[in-house]
Image 1 (cartoon, rainbow, N blue to C red):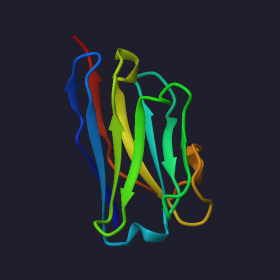
Image 2: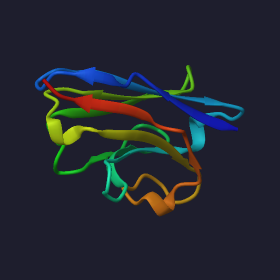
Image 3: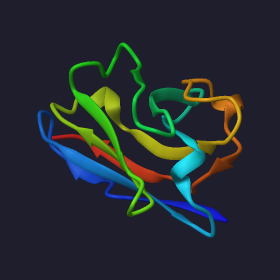
Image 4: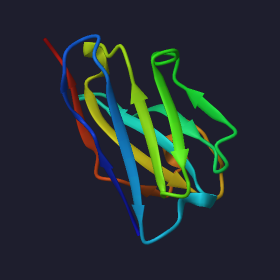
Length: 123
């Protein structure tokens, strides 16, 4: 069972990226999914999360109005659309899955983690 992130890259300030999180070996239907990021020298922080049904979402204050999380359970995928990117969004982005606790921005709540994808916002 694993999660694999994709879609990271280098983008100019004000640009957009869409990150994808794919699951293999298990179905995401019953899992809350969180997106987290970690910049060099900083702790891992919660960016966004979505409940198993997609009916609940939450965002860190720093990304509200710019990022949007969504999921397609039929495709076993979760997405993070990132708009109006800023240099301070530069980090490795991870997706994580949790079966029991529900959608939170607390990393310790999550059971399964991907390897991460690098997002760099720079001119």
